[in-house]
Image: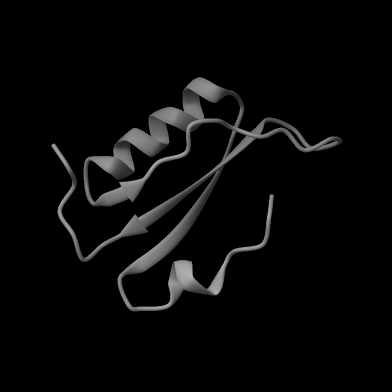
Length: 69
């Protein structure tokens, strides 16, 4: 994955969450749980790193805003 950009965590309440999971379904389920609690810029795909188990997903959270309905 690319390095985290300083703008993504420039203010209190902003966060980057990286999920490691066995499969896409699990990774996206975790993302949905986060989206129910705060505003999120969701990932639309997972990545696989050669030599590492499972998949990775990165999403961006804004704890200052309510989740979109």
